[in-house]
Length: 252
Image (tube, rainbow, N blue to C red; front, side, top):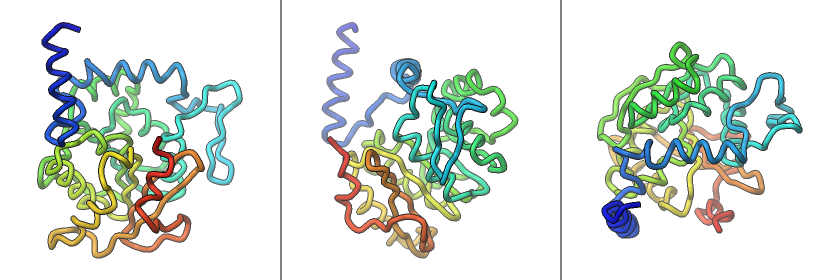
């Protein structure tokens, strides 16, 4: 790493700590971070459910014993969406497309939608999953822009996206946009120590232009990882979130 990169990295680290910089420089995120992370993690985890080598038993995804495990975050995400049975989904930060492909495998009738900040991310996605050109409505869009527009879907989800938006105003804008486009559910799988998600959602829900009349908070807890489910109506299949501390129980 040359001296200029070291200086930029140090400045960005300070900016993250005081909330004026996001975790990454999004203009070079794909080249500097994302693709390398994917290739490294694929040595430890199964990223794409292989046909004929997994089953779903009582709502749980069981992989063939010859396969690497699913990442805990991914497993709880897929099982939660499977339980909610949406007709349409939108992934914010769809990245390499693996989540969309896997959800299509476990819910074949679901309509897929995805948005990502970078054209290079979508090019990477299509190189991994060319079938998504026909199976999904994918766009380059910035979720932090006020008034983000797309067709509404039953369920919107994020996987390690909002946690990296450290600039407070864009982060809140992203949250508002997500709720404005979700008809039935919002599913968030994030690092819960990065923001006070519960208080922030409660805050925006009190604003006059918030699109839901009510927000009910639920969790899916595997004993290793915990995920947040938001709904405009009561749900019976998940545990109601009682305290924000619940989200932090597995944070080391």
